[in-house]
Length: 178
Image 1 (cartoon, rainbow, N blue to C red):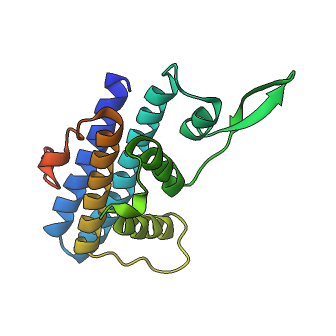
Image 2 (image 1 turned 180 degrees about the horizontal axis):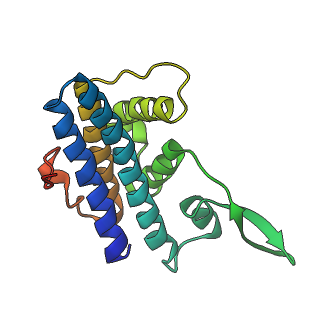
């Protein structure tokens, strides 16, 4: 992962934490906006981290074509008799996380405490992105979702890099002051 992309991923995570902090201190109208922002930016941070990890893993000489297809979200096609990566093929976030945990931690995502909360957070995020009804979020829910994102990132980092995520020990504490 490039230093610039890595810094951006961490920035997004800090922004999500800060939006949660602001929600916890805000009036009702502001609170909802901050909770929405915290949820959306939190999942953007998770996806940014996963994309950076995928770029790094796909560049390793041991990366197979099938691994790279999942990591880089590409289809596999045959061109002039040779298998190669094709056009974009997006995988569900849950599937990418399951692949990383199975491949590098040798475990299933359901063996982690954060998995069910993360899936609940994904459903909440999807409800906000594709609303069909009013999306009501509580600060405690968004707090759990962000904690699950942080836990997932830490365990994925431990499985792949053998060291935890740099922001794990700060928990939900943001370094931002806006």
